[in-house]
Picture (cartoon, rainbow, N blue to C red):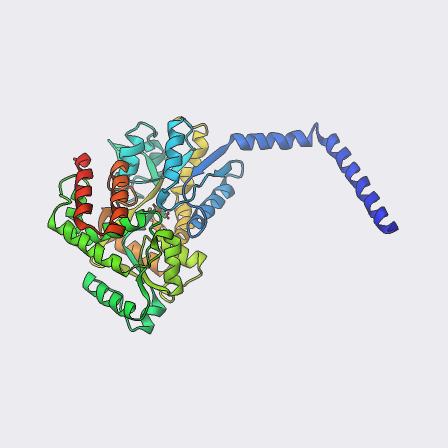
Length: 432
Ligand code: BGC
């Protein structure tokens, strides 16, 4: 008891001494500290994305750490909003932009989402000067710079290239059942039948957010139509009522008979988990799934899971590029440009992409930093035919994508081929 009282007394004395010390310093030390703080809070960059947790944020965190290392005086605010493919983030961003409260920089896909969206609305600053200053004009593939340009001006900096046409499979399940990764739809259905007979779900889907089903459908469209005709779908020069589109939609319908029953209550991570656990054998997903398998679920490439292009799409590359630009009217322009400089540097890209699952957007990144999947994909990108993804906003403006998401979502439950192609044909009227 006496001992306790003594300790309590000592603590009081110490607290008193400390507070006296603080008040003495308050004219010098304390002020300086708050001065630094307020300077730091003036120097702030708010990064808006949808990379939160499970397989999404590892790359972003590495990029932020690298930036803080180089610019300890600039505060970073990570304003990420959860939801795959920007399901929720895009709506939050739209209302902030409308209310003249833009984040310093935000995740936006190259292609229509950037150019027909924010640039056309007059909300973005050109970045030609930054590209000049950093010597970037020949450091990104020409095709990629085109995806972030409009009327001769460049509007954002690509941090990566994701591939959208990948079929991931559980290697243990495939090996145990003597299966080979399917390269055609015929092979896919043969493999799927064998798996089904064994009680294993052939294809995992999590379409709680409908974009995941749209992504499978666009993969099949690319396979059935080829790169050129697929591209014409988005300019209104290729009809959705064409027999090839009908055939693709029939294939999609057949694929849907091999998915997990609870698909509507799962998101893409939950669906990928089915494959990781061997409850399902395959899923078709962008290569952010690799980031998830490796970083979050601790699976090994080519040991626990394998990868192959979606049936019928060898030599084709569904491009999804995450880019960041400079919105008009933000406060910390210089600091934000500094962030963009790091994001566009070799160091920045090689910190981000090995974790994110994507390949670097730059042509001169350090290939040795990437695993076998990354190395293969970097090579493929050089020679493959490139196509923009609809599900991820590059192929067509947001208005069309919203309608496509709805139509495909209805299709997944009703499986009415004519209804889907008719709805898409009608929505495509606005693309002409
Ligand atoms: C983005 C990726 C992201 C994926 C899932 C895509 O739209 O480009 O960076 O990992 O959505 O959220």
